[in-house]
Image 1 (cartoon, rainbow over the protein chains, first blue to last red):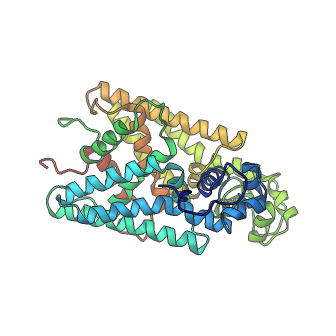
Image 2: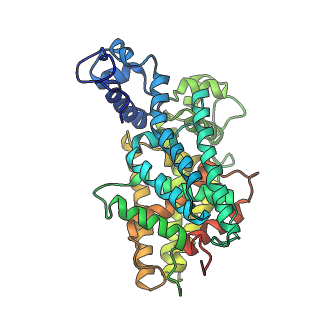
Image 3: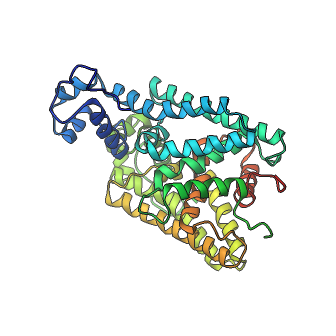
Length: 205
Length: 205
């Protein structure tokens, strides 16, 4: 679902051809290309081919664009945590579900997640988003610890560091995945999950 | 070894207390904090507490600072590739050596590697640095393929995607490792390498 629903909301002002969702999508591309701090509303207006005041018809400020963009990534990621909590499987199975669901959101919401992963925490809004990310790290670490208690995961791995390493591998796909690369998204998900659970070595290596 | 060797080079001009190495270190902190594009030489001068013209005594341009900073990361990383080539072990052993040596440089040259990993490729210099990174990806993918041919690594993993996933996990430490965290750098290296080679699952899970 997009940010605007033209059937139910008053028509947005501004140049025809852009709704708030399109402005947001193009803004996020620019933020990822030049950095959020280096992208002024003037630069963004140039990129959209509209006036600065036309952008302000869509959103009140650059920070509002950032907030909307971060929510595009954070809301589905947080929905995964809620699903993990109600998932009826073992900790091991819930861990796998968590990693796979996160992976799919990364590819689906790629530019928004890229923005989230590059945040520096220079403003209150950025720090709040980073806190929401840390809540996901904690949730993953708890699942690792629970699966270790069940005897399904190796007990020698420190849960918090392991959670960070797991997200490190999974999150990296936003930087390098290409649809025209050697494997598609579904195959990549399988390989990433299998690598994490079973490792590189052949069983009798 | 630093960038300046005061015993053999003419003394740098500029405010006492800063040599080129210190200017570079502080510049890289600022680039990582605000983004390279958003960090002007004026902002940098404020941070150093010196005049803009005093910075130009140390380096001719902001791009030269970036070039020097990227080399601080890339030169030792490329030295690893050279060592891997002359390493006498099996492909499997050379792969482990590559990952461990890279890991140590990431922690040792952390701020410089962070800058490298966040490059966007907006200038010729940035694109050259990204090309040097891609050469490392290719080298790692070749090692994965060689270790698969030797029967030491699972043959079902696609080598190029696997190389990216391995670097994804290893590289992530620059974003989150803390010396006061649950495990130290040496333990983290062991856990990261063991996770990648042996996986999360207990052997009889």
